[in-house]
Picture 1: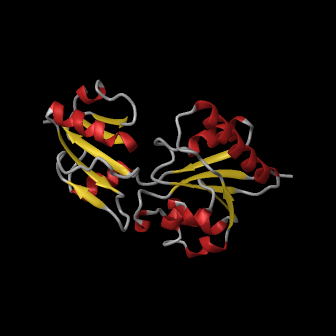
Picture 2: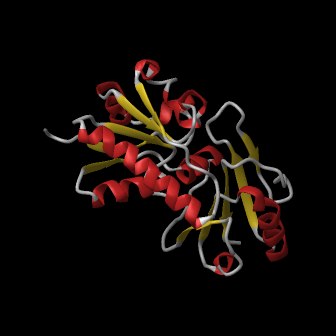
Length: 228
C-alpha cells in the first residue's frame, strides 16, 4: 500500500484573507487535518482557516496537544507522540495536512513533527505562509530593511541583551511572559520599537512606542525594533 504525505501548511499570521490559495486547496482536497491542540475547534489555526475554507468543518481532525514549555523531556515526549499519531494515518495511505500559524519554516512547533516523519522515510511537503513579522511591518506601514540593512529575527523569550546590539532591524518574537523584561531592556537601551498584538485578528492592538507596550501582552505579540 502507498503511504500518505504529511503537508505542513502555513496559514498566515491571523487574517484569514492572507491565507494562500495553496493552503486552501490542500485543506479542501484532503480529509485529515492535524491541529496543535486538544480540541480542534478551539485552536487559533482552526478559527483562522475556517473563515476562508468552510469545508474545514466537515474534516476529520487529528488533535495533537503541544504544551507551551521549555521542559525538554516533556517536549520530546509530545513531539514523538504527535509523530506516532501522524504516522498511523500515513501508513493507511492517508495524507495529513498540519495547519500552523505564519510560515512553517519560522519557529514552528510543526517542524519537530515534520523532521521526525521525514526521518522515518515518509513524504513531507512544506507550504509557505505569510510570516507574522512581514504582516506586522505591512500593518505598521513601514519597511523592514532597506539597502544594506541587516534583519535579525530573535526569539525574545531567551537572553536577548547581546542580540539587541546587532546592527539593523530586530524582530522580537515569542516574548510571552517575558514581555515586561523585554520592554525594560528596550527602554534602557533607548531603542525605538513598535508592537502589534494579535496581528490580523479581531482583537488586534497596535502600540507605536516602547512606553505603550503593556507588560501583560498576549502570546501573539511581535515587536519591531528599528535602528536609531
